[in-house]
Length: 412
Image 1 (cartoon, rainbow, N blue to C red):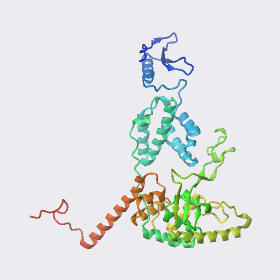
Image 2 (cartoon, rainbow, N blue to C red):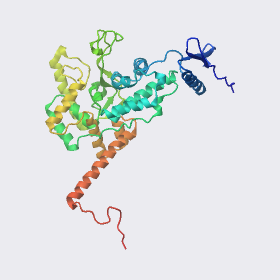
Image 3 (cartoon, rainbow, N blue to C red):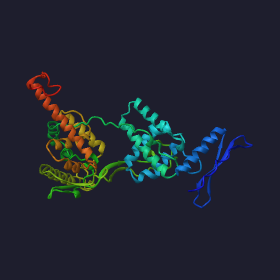
Image 4 (cartoon, one colour):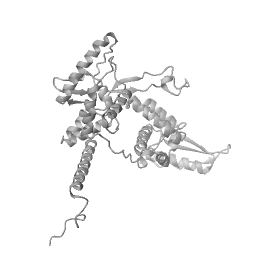
């Protein structure tokens, strides 16, 4: 057991400030790691000395030097750390949440002085401004990860994001098309280009990026299998000038980084091989013949990226145009407006309703956790209950026999 060090001497200097020297450990060169504490009052000096001693006892002493602010550390995290784990679109989302919420509320706070209550206050402000709890949860996850890296690097003594309850993150009620509505949508696709795009969405539940990134090299119509190794995403243009050009948007920077549509790895562990239903295989064959005819007509203007769903010159479909095509289809079919991602929910719900095993649905959708897939089963159960209740009301009215509400009636 190491000997207990005496409490540091605290005294007022000729400059009027209070001073103390605290040994917090040993430097890599073997010398004592001694910190100089200098404060206006004796109480402030004592508080800082006690803080350093507590860090020494816990083995989590922050690094020496001028402490970073929350904003300066988040910029370091987003520039040097997060890109190794996140795709460009995710980083863009992180930066947006930092600019809109983290920097205005916490940016000027010293990183090592950040308190749990400040995070609580930020999430409360988000709630009062009408932001969904799921939005606040995303901000919380960004902060938690960034502070965890700061803790590992000795920049903070604790991860304050782990000291509070995370926002609830309740998701809005799942939306999807009914079987009848899905059939109406597919009926009107006969009049549009890339009709098979929507059959793939509603039959297999591919994410938008997965469908747009699909290439013929990964579609085997003979064996009836399809690989999902990549997804098409929009890479956001970023500043290449270290912020010196004066432009707000990275896309306007004269030295902007490469951007545009790129193929990236699928979300999570979603790289997978799927069976192609025979009716869908037939539609893909017709789609392939139509695309080859377009290629022949385009001649030297054709840009061959091998995309299954492409523009009429072979270039990949733009996600924004693809979304607008979905909106137009819903309007033409006369069904309710739902998000394009809800086509994925529709495919999952219909599979579960038809009795497809949840493990199979999990594989088809590329879920990493079966609990996500089980959410669709709960929706189907609710729909079944609603349907039987409606039938009961239709056939028997609203009357409830005496005693039925509280349990079985006595028989004797």
